[in-house]
Image (cartoon, rainbow, N blue to C red; front, side, top):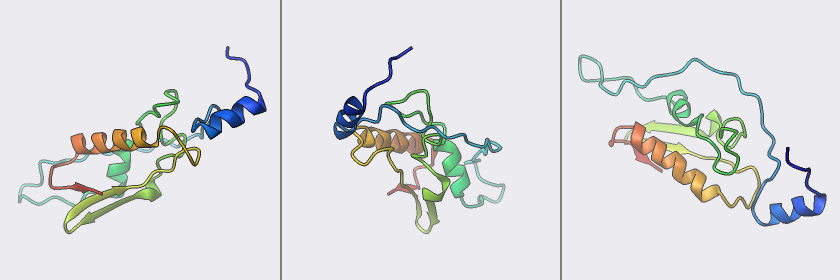
Length: 126
């Protein structure tokens, strides 16, 4: 078991862009949503929803705290997912656990890659 860190060590880590003791929140598990990208029989499908997008990213692990997901750390929240249809776009905003998080760029890259691999190419990530 790791030894507790002192207040001075914690402050130094925070100034260096690290959060050694993040607050992990309990999350209610929702029914998994599957995006059917094949479309309906007439070639049309219902628009992608923010719930579908959030379901894709909710289980992404934090690169610094691999025991927790971005949802559990409240880095990613459904309220910060925005989807538009004309032209199709997805905006995902995230909030690092500390203001000068050294992993913010990596988190953004993880989210982008997950969405690029999961969504059709017609969607623009902004």
